[in-house]
Image (cartoon, rainbow, N blue to C red; front, side):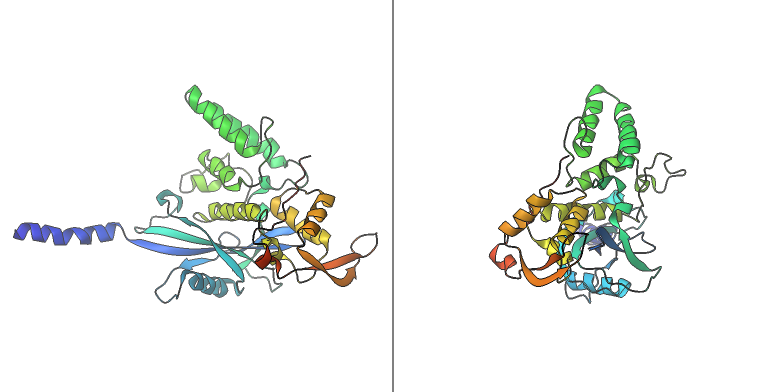
Length: 323
């Protein structure tokens, strides 16, 4: 009996050490400035604001806000929980404990401040250049990604695996007469990771990968988390008016359209877009005008604050151009 008791008391200690768990709080903070979507970064644009969840934090959100303000001096406004990541093989370090990354999506307006090597704003298409289709199919997608992904699919062993890879690539990247789906940001990044075409996939290897495609990398799993945030936002703007969190207090309809296009990476039909905005009664005139183009002055609008309470499912509907 004594031996069994001793064994039972020793076992939990062994398990507690091997299963040590810590939680990181990570923020994907998005702004749109001069028609370009930008993300708040630290570490010379190689990481998202983040820090460990500590006993002194009142809640996950308060802990996240504290880390972001400490690292970037930027207070957070609108935030929502994004996703929880716990994959053992995606962190890229040799820590003994299991790290759970709890990510949040924040929407704000970029504040002009002194440049700092410790933090700043970076265009999100610097990390995902194949996601910007506002000027047509990007060169990096047409001339680099597609050939390398096709070669990766063809080198698979067995016809079934080759067929599966080809179908996944075609679906994610809009090939073989399929439409480009702007929401599949994470699926595209995951395929590139699986094909070892992004730097994160070969991190720690002796030579890296000479086939890595253009696009700024990030530490640990941060580019994957950023991809998740972009995908969530591209989906969310279709059924909730969250885009107004990114707008100044007063704006023109053209500025609103350019913001939606920047986030979606796609052009929208101008007249359909304006008609939908008017039909959903999302904005109201301020009585002011501003000169935007050579034409007559454009009216300025503001977001109707009662919209969120009245129409919780109202969104921009994104009348995307498929040309």
